[in-house]
Image (tube, rainbow, N blue to C red; front, side, top):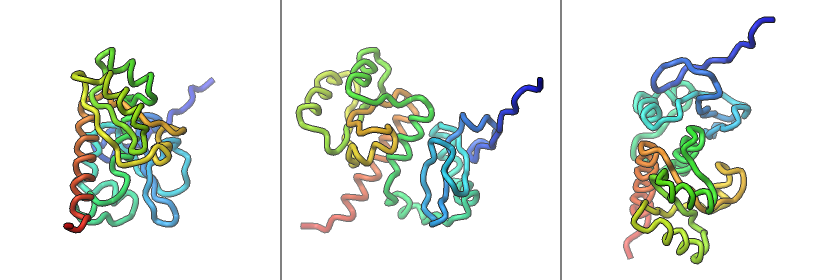
Length: 192
């Protein structure tokens, strides 16, 4: 009996060939929208990236994702304004196995010292937000996401309001994307 062949794909960041299951697929649908494909089964043209912040940054800087998907990516200033940057970062965290989802799982991660960053959905109740702040106090940074639990369900498969990132590099990527989104929202608001 011949061994089953494992499909390999090349990362657009580092250029290494790896098993398809270990990579994150970015897909361009027929209507031109670009999204993350966690299942690997969405129809459309795909590009693969390692689930690390370094590979993603390298692929974006060199324009390899845009070239592979045959789309034009706007300039750097417009790129930061594209919605979903934090969703993309969280999806990378999930694919890398560095995202903990749910209140009690995050609480356990914080108590074990694994969490690098705790994120709360924008529509999280005040009571839950206080409870998260209480168990994260002096241990780990807590940040608010601009997205609702419903929007974050793309990543968690069900509405979840509390997330923890356990990888330091991916936590930096999430902080950077949150800061960029906050700056863009500030720019877009007219002075009052």
